[in-house]
Image (cartoon, rainbow, N blue to C red; front, side, top):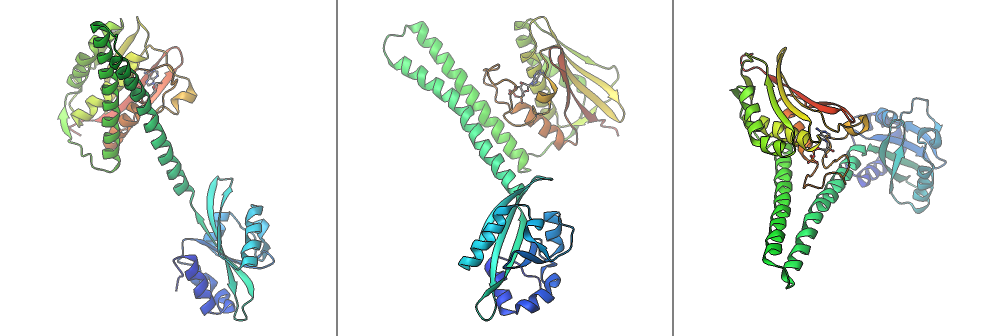
Length: 360
Ligand code: ADP
C-alpha cells in the first residue's frame, strides 16, 4: 500500500484514512516510496521519519526531535509555519552541505476530521542531479551561442564593409576569404556538436576492425605535416617495430589522433617537436602524442576534457571551439579506452591512450 504520486494524493490518502492509523502503519506506507517522508506536529516536532528520509537528511538520532535538528535550514521551519497557517501545500528547495545536495521539500498540512490542521507531512526528494543537468544544459546553450556569435559578428562586419562602396578588388577578395574562414569555423562547430549528440544518444556505432597502428599514425602525420612545417616544427612518428594490429574503429582513432596532434602543433612554439608514438604495453598498445610546447598547469589539466573549455580564451582565436578533447575522450570511451594527459607548464604535454590488440 505504498503511497506514490503527487502531494494531493498523499493528503487525500491520509485524510481518507485516519491520521493515527496512518502513523501506525507509517513505515508500511512509505517503504516503497523512494522519497523521504516525515510526519510532524504543528509545533515543528518530527514525530516520524522513514529510512529514505534519514538517508537523505543524514539524520541518525531518535524521533521525536525538533525540525531544526533534522533539517538544518531555518527556511523550512518558516515554510512549515506558513503552510499550516494557510492550510496549503507548499514546496521549497533546500541546499544542504556535507555532502552538497539539493533537496525538494514538499510540506502538506494534514487536517483531521474536525478540520483542524494538527499534523504536517513532509516529503523529501533529492533533486541534485536534476539541478545539475539543468545547469549543464543552460551552460551548453550559452556556450554554443557564444561560439557562434563571434564568427557571425565578423561575417556581418565583413559583409557591411563589402557592401559599402570603396573596397578595391584585392580588398574584396581578402574580405571574401575571411568570410569563408569564419563560415568554415561555424561549420566545424556544428559538425562537432552533431557528433557529440550522436555519441551521447548512442547513435554512433563503431566499426571495429584489425588495423596497423603505424599506418594510422602515418596518415595523420601526412595530413598535418604541412601545418607543422609552416610553424617550423618537427612532426615525427615512432612506432615500435613488430607491433601486431590493433582492434579499432579506424576513422575514430584517426580523428582522435588528428585532434591531439593538431593541438600539439597549435600549442608548441617554433623549433619544437611533436611525436606520435606507439609501444606494446601489456595487454595492448599504448599510443602517445607528445609535444615540447607550452604545456598546462595542473588546474588546467583537470578541466581540458570539459566541453568548450579553452585554457586561455584569448590565446587561441583560431576558430577552435574547445570541443576537440571532449569528443576525443568520448570516442575512446566508446572503444573501452581512456584518454589521459600529463603536462607541465612550459615543458610540454603527453596525451596517452591504450588500444587492444586484434589477436587478443
Ligand atoms: P580546442 O578546439 O580549443 O583545441 P580542445 O578540446 O582540443 O579544444 O582543447 C581544449 C584546450 O586544452 C585547448 O584550448 C588548450 O588550451 C588546451 N590544450 C589541448 N591540447 C594542448 C597541448 N598539447 N598543449 C597545451 N594545451 C593544450
